[in-house]
Length: 420
Image (cartoon, rainbow, N blue to C red):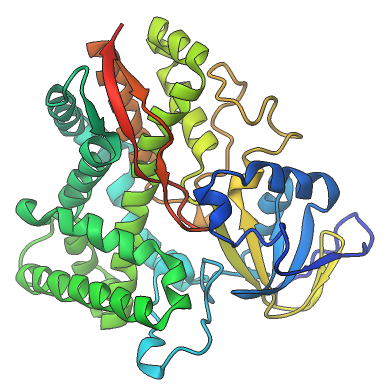
């Protein structure tokens, strides 16, 4: 039985808002239009923990500040991941054939979570990062050398997607000529809002089944082969060998979306963010030793996954607010990373920020992103190879943003390269 933490705060009156309301931050329009910042700022100031009722996804709690999210993440027995990690977990009014659950280790509690994560984690150790660094650098250099100087092109497609898709193909030992399928599948899998539409959900499942069938062939081919460092072989030569088809597809979804969206949108956020703060960009160009700090600051500023969900396992007082078993608690990383009590100048990219790596973009506690080191490595090498070539990315106009409240990123970004 989990131990309820009463906390030092006495029971407070909870601010409850009824959708539609500006504090219903599940609405994707606010991210597409890039106007989420003042909404979360208002919540942090007036009611950092509040409850939304009647949203498209049902009732849920907003948790918007850094320390509150850390507190909740540190109590995984009291705040479960097993009912889903996004704001959409139990879509209503879907036909039975579309109400498919795909277990994945990030959406499990202990001990299952620990056992399955232990299989994947060795692929992302410091030693593995060192082993892969030369190859990642070479591929990054090849892509940059193939870009036109002084001509307009889409940074998301030519750089962010291509680099992350190549990396995923290497991690899975996936057929190189089909690697763009990984991008397509990731986009469909990561769009949690598909569950709101029967037609979209049906189309989404078609893509998930296509991915499952493709990976099943790879699994079957490697079943009797020896151990290898790719993720499929790691699963085969572990206790995950006997997982059912739905768990296999669920873990594939996790690894594809996790390996794609975090890095891809951080790379796009790097181009866009530095263009918004030209003085910091010039500082980085003059001082390449700031690149490690820039990596962390860009990941904080972008926050490529806006939220995670936890589900209350027993009635208790959550930091002064009475919550009930089954309540959905949404941890808004995108807000915590702009928390004024933790970050000076939170809305700025500031390369000399003290303690640049203490953001929550990768989560906190037992569910912290298992591939965080790889995302950091890829972004660092991109910045280092750009510095080597003295390349500057000039964003042309406003980018087209992802329409979602979960993945926080970019669909298209026109840029022009120059040198300095």
